[in-house]
Amino acid sequence: MRAFLSILAIWLTSVSGALAQDMTALARVDAARSEMSDGWFGKTYITLGLSQGVPFRVFLLNDPARLVVDFREADWAGIKPEALLSEPGRISDIRFGAFQPGWSRLVADLAEPMLPTEIGMPVEEGSGQATLEITLKTATPEEFAAQTGTPVDPAWTAALTTAPKLKMPQDDTFTVVLDPGHGGIDPGAEHDDVMEKDLMLAFARTLQDALKRSGVDAVLTRDDDFFVALETRVAIAHQVQADVFISLHADNLSQGGAKGATVYTLSEDASDAATQHLAARHDRSDIIAGADLTGSDDQVAGILLDLARQENEPRSAALAQKLVAGMTEAGGPMNRRPLRKAGFSVLKSADIPSVLVEVGFLSSKRDLANLRDPIWRAVMVNAMADGILAWRDSDEARKPLIRQ
Image 1 (spheres, one colour):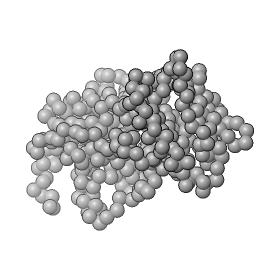
Image 2 (cartoon, rainbow, N blue to C red):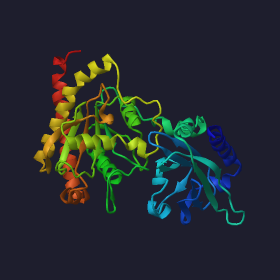
Image 3 (tube, rainbow, N blue to C red):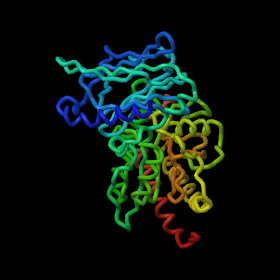
Image 4 (cartoon, rainbow, N blue to C red):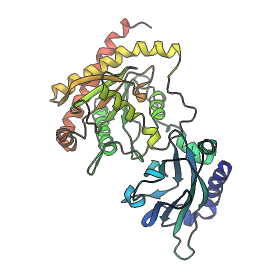
């Protein structure tokens, strides 16, 4: 089965050249012709109506059990998950959307182990419409585990696993990497028609402009609505030799009086239960987007890394303090405990001072109103830019005193 899935992906990629006119443009998903439902004898059916055929591949991931379908490319605009999955069953949840530029992805959470027994995408000769058809059947955990893993095919995976090539800054340029949280298939927190990924991308772009006006080279980990894996976000910071890494978020969290801006630094021990819960949610981004975590190690090991991190912990803490001071002076509003700590994976760079900023919480009516207000956003952006510049100057002044 695993070999079949890989062959299917390779075949569809190879025929895409021959069917260039039919299989290279954007394929629209038709909710009226799409459905996911359970049948008899442990079978589950996935039917996805498309305006035309597109290259695709199907594979399985474990821990937790997921079925992933990659497309190049499908347009999910206007489609809601409930339009495809009317009620949870053997498929407990689904999400879909942009994954990388030119790529779309559907991820189905499986309530029990299931293996594909039939996969196809017949295309109608007259209309050119296509239908993706997948039949799944209940399997044992051992059978499922044996078939999981991303197919090894450079034609499909190269664009999805490498960091984008970014322009290197000049040696004497102070460089800040801004990381708009979530993106693409992973929307982050949602409230009515507001999505965290959109708010933070707009916020990061505005902060980038403010920093550039001050002579700072500001780089975004994503400049559009696509997904970036957690490790790739950190890799981008290393690629451009960043002096600072700042991850931007606006979560939906009810625990611990979640309202007001909060700045987080890295710590193995979370400063409170709400922060620990928030860090766990952030670290689920790769799982939500269907990333293959097989063989990954959550522990950043090595004595040298630990030593490097000890050198940078005070610098990260100082950066957090400067940001809080600038945002407080601008009127915030700030969280009642604006400085907190937790084990956010995106902050685990050993040699780059890194912080994560919750600009506000969508679960707070006040914060949501502020985040939607362009005047408030402009004030907060300028305050953060001032905080970053203040930290740069004080850090530069301390360099002669820092142990090399």
